[in-house]
Image 1: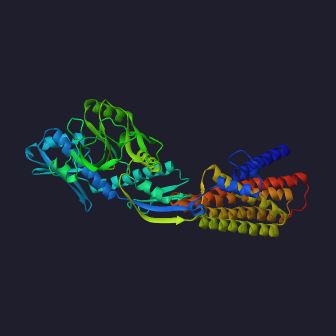
Image 2: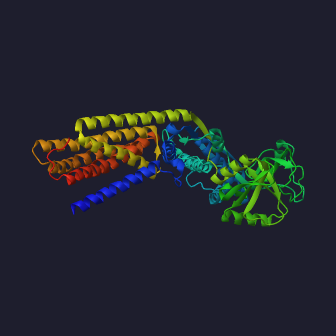
Image 3: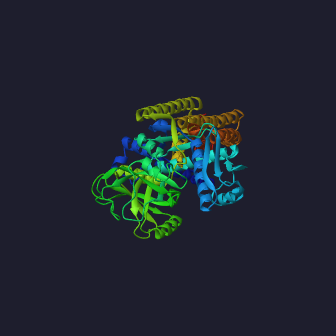
Length: 562
């Protein structure tokens, strides 16, 4: 019965070891001749383990979301919506003013008849979410002010939204194993982004900074085949009283030489000089209702791409209703405050459209990517940028490997010299611990960093400590005159409790480092915890199995080389 149990332990150890070795140095594809040999093993090892920025090289960025700009934009947008709501209700509101400086954000409506202030408030709150704002009424003015505590909440939400958008854009670009997390104090608005192995950081920075504010807007133009444009912005503003209002905006538009209604993007003539158009605000549909966007080639020309987009069901319904009622009018596709194209509505349109403009392939793909990922709530600014070259990463790997091999070699020599034959047992357990720890990193898809290598080396020390505890206890039992079989059994049983105590306290410390530490500290904590957990298998289960085989072959063993 004991022999059967020993065989089960042995088979389990062999299977786990072979599986771990395969995970570490095995190919991710089917075996080929090139996978056998030192070069193949190194290549597979590099492919299997995700290396961090400090080992692989790449870009390190610290950016800050301009949350003050976010609150300022929010205030102005809510003010425009409030003015439009009052005017739609035919109430006596002339205009509004916004205050967006020195930590104060307020929207004020100016009334010609203060007696109708309550009616204006009722009309506004039905269309604009002013629930968290503080309202005051004074004479012919109604003011909504954003409280400080709500400002803090909204700023935090803006940073979280920015992180989601950045994460989406980075993943679409295909950066492997990026690190994205909050940085600095909670109210700093800072974000840390690390991109290992990235060879084009400037393109990523351009993508992160790119706006993607898409709006489909009604053009203010007479109902005839000729689009109403203006040669200058001043001329466009003069047509609406000299300045933009809550419901009238002016945007630049690069008109086509052939502006016949219904013209397609294919074989378009070159753009004419930029002119200006007047559009109605708010937009019929905005980018929040966008479902997808893709770059589409029109001809074989390298710079003849356009963006094809489709709307979500809610947007398609709203857009379809509007186009059905506005046949014969013009609609502008406005992207980042510029009219990219103007369409003459010949029939009802529901869920799709195009943005023309003779984009290059990369610019079209980048624009489609930013549209799909959504808009950043506010601009971001870069506060720190570091580039780690692949050569520096290779030096870090070389230094880490040399440190690991040097430490392991020293430990092996010490264990063999001090514990003699039993030291071989400890050496086997140590090597297995390293292999299985790397395999665990691969299974968890974790990233190995330079601090992670330090955690791996520390786990070697903890594994040695476990063997020392067991072997010293066995020595004490042998000195007390016990048989080898009993000394081995007592040594493992008595030392096991102490090993559990030391491992649990260290794991708790590592867990705290992981919860509250930054990326590199987390890498250290992960490898240390994995090494400690695997050590319970290698230093206790495997090591004891080896002793059990020795005793199985020589049950009456009188001496133990320890």
